[in-house]
Length: 130
Image 1 (cartoon, rainbow, N blue to C red):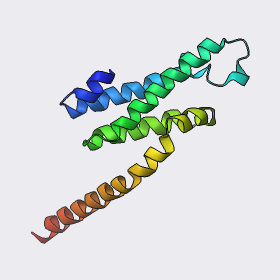
Image 2: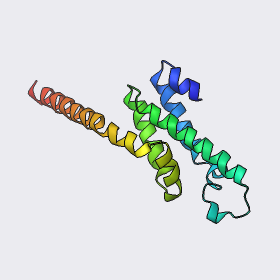
Image 3: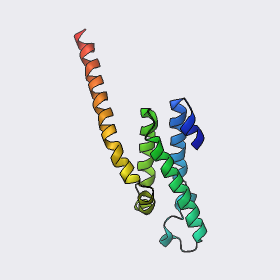
Image 4: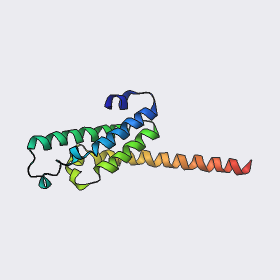
């Protein structure tokens, strides 16, 4: 999935792959061992393994923010918000620099929103003036 998400030329396929990663990252088998205090009978190896997987998913989602397709980066943002919004992931978010990457993405996103609003306004003017 990760290779297809990074290399496929079809933006819908890349977007779907990112969506799948977002769904997989929410799987209970992955999320149940992240919070040690809730599961005292799990091994350190289980916690480390799931933490590694979640970091890998997080990095892939962050990399998808660089995709030129709005379909792909919006799917990545959606997955990031769905998966990493819980406080149990704060250590993972911090360790992969997610907040810094999201802060760097804001100016680009603002520019895209302004462009879209200008385009919609232009189309609206054409529609009613013609």
